[in-house]
Length: 162
Image (cartoon, rainbow, N blue to C red):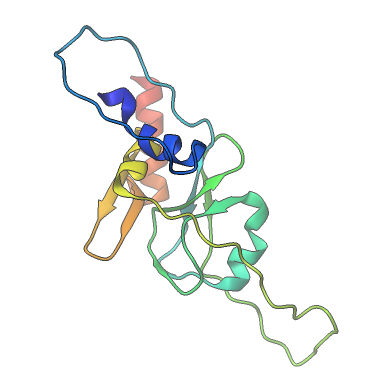
């Protein structure tokens, strides 16, 4: 049963909503090995605040986002999937520096793709070993087990030495 978590959504997407899926628990079986997960890392928030469209627009090439502009974020929250392996700590609360000088074309409006939203099942399938799913009445968010960057580095160093 642990292998079919997340299969329903992938199956419905592949069949354009035409598939019907049922399953029944038949009994316990011996361990069959690890289930492969995602290879890409996470985009993690550097500091608590509000996600700014300017920052999200500048960071689009780093990966896909799970939050939209104007949403409250906190340090250690996973707000996107990195295009490369390994986690990347980013600052999405940085706003544009205001100056008195204006140049044509430099003040373009940010065009952001819609954020990727998870159901509870999809979030549980998506997370890695060092991440949690946070469920509130209004949101389903992903976060790191250790919210502070120095705590994550210390924990990863402890795992390597152990």
